[in-house]
Length: 193
Image (cartoon, rainbow, N blue to C red):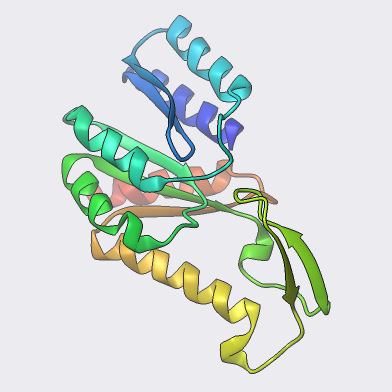
């Protein structure tokens, strides 16, 4: 994610655009206001690689509220997240944000957030809540499987973005992101022509 954010910052700089950064967890961790120049980009890149969040929880709605209150016009916003949160917490705010900005969602997921193998019982710890849960990964009826749950969640997230006509770029932590990013930018350019 850090490399992706740094790449987007460099692309914007090459385009002579101002670049800012918002780091959030369940609260706003740090805001770097948009500016130009190599020193400014250096500050953003350094922060990307060194920031230590105060919390392991995530509140997408809080970040969207912050962006709405900025009221910066003609800005392109790239929000990088796994977008794993109840959508009713941020659905309406996402709509407002998409009206205020040229908003792009970038969903970065682990391949196991698409499908999950049948390996029996598995103890996992939620990285946000630190809660230990035992999952039964054995194949059950299709509508009760973990893979079905994951696919349903991904589809519901995608539908929210489509509903508000927001671009969504899906990336995987297990794959290089440069070619999908180039393809995404080419598609955006073709749509605008």
